[in-house]
Image (cartoon, rainbow, N blue to C red; front, side, top):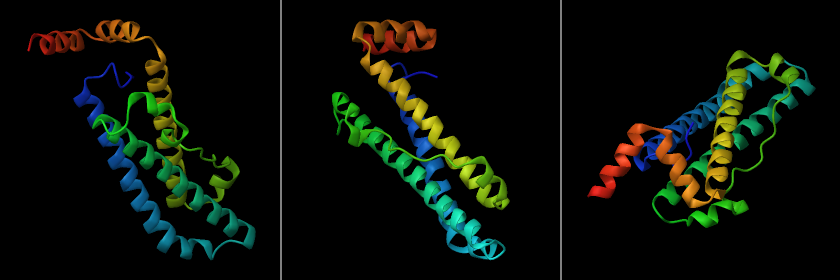
Length: 165
């Protein structure tokens, strides 16, 4: 996986757009499930399990909203609306999200389990991307450019073509 500055801007934009669409679709699926189908599923369980179920729906929503907010921040950064130096500010970072306990996931209906696991996986991918971007942005610029050029012959060629025009 490359960092934002080592990827061609169009490739980074496509990566962010793909994650953004995935997060929006998952948020819509979660809303639809937890608003409608979950009611029928919850009636099969005791009070404590129903409470756990409700907590998990909030965790899924929180994870997805943090991911969507972070991706929107990246889009704003790409458009130049946020300075690179500002990206380290807490308000632009991926917000914290609680993990779901395996025991809780195990008792959930399949649809709910898929949403929980899917939202956790998406959150972890975005968290890793944020970490890689931060480490790249904290390296000296000369080192970042050298790493970028040596990362891929295709990227090196694109860089040379951009400099030529």
